[in-house]
Amino acid sequence: MKCIILSHGGLSLSLLNTAEKITGKQEDIICLSNNNLSNKELDNLLRKNINSIDNKEDILIFVGLKGGSCWNTAIRQMKLNKNIHIISGVNLPMLITFIIKKNKLPLNELIKKIVDSGKSGIVCK
Image 1 (cartoon, rainbow, N blue to C red):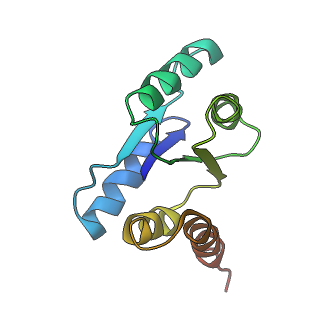
Image 2 (cartoon, rainbow, N blue to C red):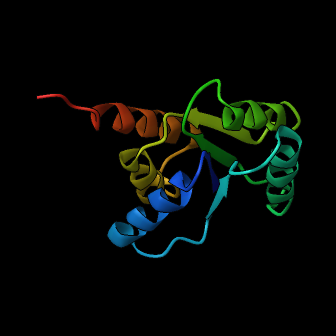
């Protein structure tokens, strides 16, 4: 399973760099930013990266904000590729869960575990 983090600004790379300090170097994660890109340019960038992945492999796309430009771009690609799955609200617990569990759980269980860990990582005391 491959993962693309598609975010505003430098969020995707910052999340990956932080996760790698905890889990070690990751080869199956691509970081993309919408920084200074039009919607068309962002579509092209995401499509190019999706096309670089084996078309039989599932692709999980993390975005920061549901309804934003990254979300909308990912949705357009998901409509063209049944192997794409999107999760919004990306945070560090979600990414670490993906890294640790990606080869241990079936896709549906993995997605549930990722979403659960993202939610449980949000605490107010």
